[in-house]
Amino acid sequence: MNVLIVTLGSRGDVQPCVALGKGLKNAGHEVTICTSELFQPFITAQGLHYVPMNNQLMQLMDSDMGRDAMENTHNLWGTIRTTIKLFSQVKTMYRQTLQDVWQTTQAVKPNLLILASKAAFMAESIADKQKIPLVIALPFPQFVPTVQSPALGFPDWPLGHWYNRFTYWIVHTAIGLYGGIPNEFRRKVLQLPPKPKRMGLLHRADGSPIPVLHCYSQQVVPRPTDWPESAHVSGYWFLEQQASWQPPEDLKAFLEKGQPPIYIGFGSISGRQPQRLAKVVIEALQATNQRGILATGWGGLQANDLPKTVFQLDQAPHDWLFPKVSAVIHHGGAGTTAAGLRAGRPTLICPFFGDQPFWGNQIYTLGVGPKPIPQKQLTTSKLAVAMHELVSNQTMRRNAETLGEKIRAEDGVGNAISILEATFSAQLSDH
Image 1 (tube, rainbow, N blue to C red):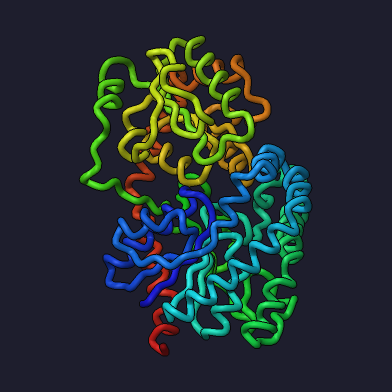
Image 2 (tube, rainbow, N blue to C red; image 1 turned 90 degrees about the vertical axis):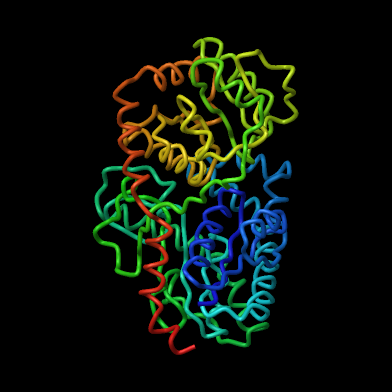
């Protein structure tokens, strides 16, 4: 197969795609990844082909408006308000993304297109024009309806099957608001007729179902029994650390000279008050007599501002670092959540937006971490209580260790490749 993977987002969105790409390459397939230019060095260093996409999404996330939006989308209504507020900018970004993907497909000439992004959903028209197979890859359950649970972002009210089904209708309708963009693109650029509305989000224009590949563990989110055969759960797509990577001496020394620290990191997202967050975290660590590792994203915090019991970390592979800490505290990105669970460490999620509250609630439901604390509600006292539970609750720690063992036994990348090869073998033989 000649596979093109399209994704948008932060490092946590791109890294699983790189893991899948490496697995496909090792299985004998040609792989190209199309994403923001920021990630070109990372992708090419893994031996994969790279083609550029605009950086508009990352720039929006890093703007004052974007940071404000992230701080105000911790619930459904906040998400709706943010979507309306950013509608015009997002429409412009989508149009440019479609142009980028169209140019890429003409150059790469793939015979399988993997859209690994919510924003990339709109590029399915390009697969229609190229007459090639298409799969959607997602790190969370969001778009395939089920009567067994509501859509991500909706409260889990005990209202029965009708309510759960209705929440997915709302999600599909909301995404449909952008439907004019791909249909305009189909007509003006691809010279294709509009996609019939009745086909919806999960079917192509000809009515065939679009396979959806979810890259998380069924140990964390069980697959609903009423999903169609076109919806798969493969397990996590982990990118193994480079054998050549070595930790800096100061990090090694810090880890060796005391009790295992708590890892605290909010990825590329730190909101508009990173200094406030840093102050809360440091005070909570001191209140509980815990050592800590603060990952990047703290808005100019200098190492000399920290007590000796707190280490500021530029970067380290999660699969190397997390087994060496006592617990992990983070924003709830799908990738960081997966890495903490795989390491068997109890986890506290302090969500900003998007799928992060979902992962926080799932951690709590599984008994491998305390109840999530939204960023806006994060205080020193609340965080100190959660830190104490993370390190002292032995049932929680055993649950985390058991779940970690199960996740480490899975081969998510291998499962995904088997699904792709089995699903598309007949179609690919015609190309």
